[in-house]
Image 1 (cartoon, one colour):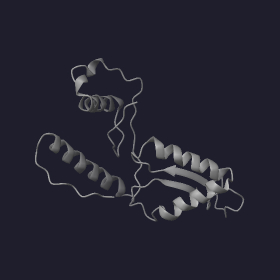
Image 2 (tube, rainbow, N blue to C red; image 1 turned 180 degrees about the horizontal axis):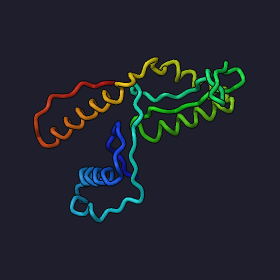
Image 3 (tube, rainbow, N blue to C red; image 1 turned 120 degrees about the vertical axis):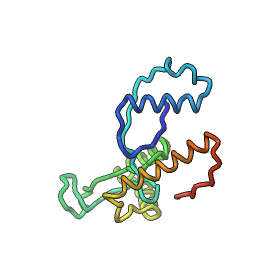
Length: 163
């Protein structure tokens, strides 16, 4: 499993494959002469979900029942969600799945952990739409260009940490 290259727009598979080969040669320089011999079983790309505070969004929206109609959530309805992991990796994703499963099953410990998560990392009330995608793409472009120039030996001042 090899992945990289966060983007806000989906690219065709041939471009994703080309970019992965380049990244593979950069991470493993000993393969740089043999990347054409490397075969990918699966290649995919797509939009990467970013949250404004760079933290995943995990929880339940009890304002909607299972039929997508407004409801009060008392009947246990609602939409459970885990999104916005934006490159945080597999471990937090698996943890979120475990946390949601415990909460869905009514496990008191799972519900308490979910409330803690929502208390300290609440969803933003406005996600910046329609400018969010453009802004995120611009930030990614600047950071990628900065990284590229730094790798080429161009003296670069440090970029600010966004989170």
